[in-house]
Image (tube, rainbow, N blue to C red; front, side):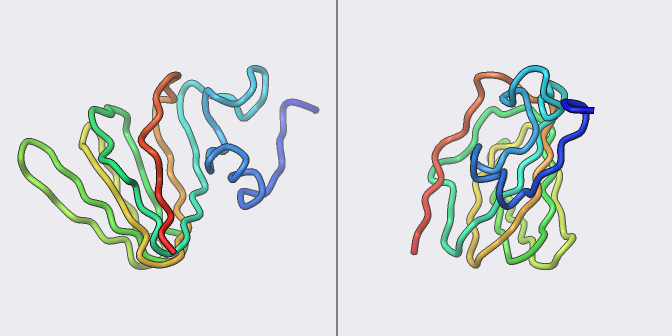
Amino acid sequence: MDGLVYTGDAGTDGPLDHGWLIGHFKPAGSVRHSDAFEVKWGQHPAGDRRTEWVRSDQRLTTMILISGRFVLDFAHGGDTHRVILDRPGAYVVWEGVDHTWHAPEATVILTVRAPSIPGYQAAAVQSVP
């Protein structure tokens, strides 16, 4: 069943590809290769933040808080909205909304995004001690 089943550890595999476990960027033929969706195990130290807004991304995104606290800011059509994920299982879903985020404390987030689009990459993340 080699190639049909993959077992791993998100905490170990995630850092190898900026947290991403499944998506178009995994090797073709791998069970972890998908054009349909992406999965990320995001481990963020306290003070981690997106340095720029993600703009014009039309994919459907779901973020689920595993542990810690995560703050997202959204902007669309001149309106802004802040979402704070502050308990395990809290989640947010969006599509086509500009956003940025920061982790005021050490945080683990599970992100599912669809579809998986080649060539797309958001701005860098800055870790602040």
